[in-house]
Image 1 (cartoon, rainbow, N blue to C red):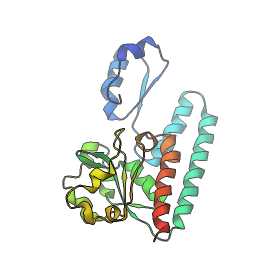
Image 2 (image 1 turned 180 degrees about the vertical axis):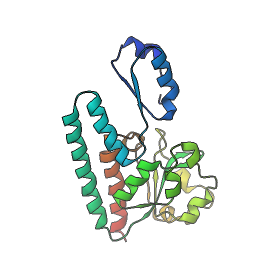
Image 3 (image 1 turned 45 degrees about the vertical axis):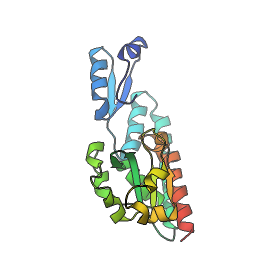
Image 4 (image 1 turned 135 degrees about the horizontal axis):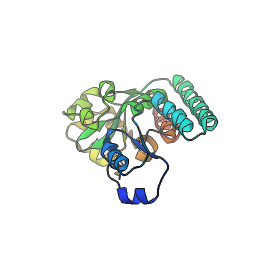
Length: 216
């Protein structure tokens, strides 16, 4: 699990380096350090941070050239999507839901990827908050008021259930619900801040947004 680990099992493997991510794994990192292991915890939250993390990791393991080449390919892919998005007739308003109970909006790199893909995050002010608890939408009707054209669901590994979203009180008037534009993006593709988010995750967002734009 993301927030727990079998410390003994990790120690038995005698790794040269253990990598972690975010404050959520701080306790795991501390236990591994006390066990005598070398640990590095990344805390990247934006698209630019992801690219910097890849370059840094390459340097840490002696693969600077390969990491630099990967970063270049990722940047080229991002720019291709950005250019394609610029040709869309209209940018949809997008609500990205990271969790359903309570409702949590998308983290910063997700919000940025929505923008690159051609949409506009309806909760940009929450995207700046790194902690999920600070991105909780206290009033579900605030989503209704912000009238997203598209709803993406990525419930941290739990299957997204569009029918549950549609059934929420007052959500029947949301443009995304009226138009049937509710889509799942697998958490493994978008909620892990690494290469997959910048490739598969971005492609999934752009595909849905482009499809919506073609119907305008």
